[in-house]
Image (cartoon, rainbow, N blue to C red; front, top):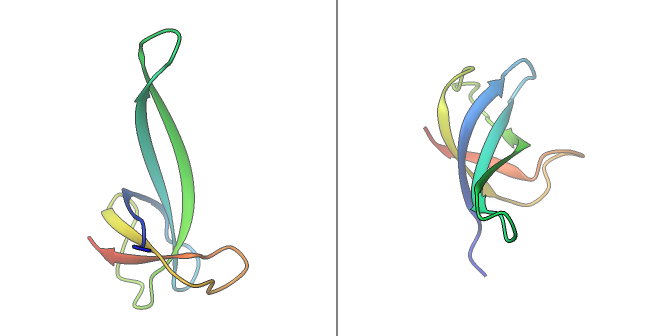
Length: 76
């Protein structure tokens, strides 16, 4: 099964080797037929601490690294 890849923006880089990524998805509401924006935050592994707040990154699913990290940063 292929691993999911999401694109988002780094909102926090305060933790060592970890970034928080805000991912937005847009979809049409079934009843109202208007575009709805939903956001979700993911904690991703960043081994070299190279990404800073505001960077646009792509994250990929991986095996659990810690209690809250199940994603890793692929590219900027």
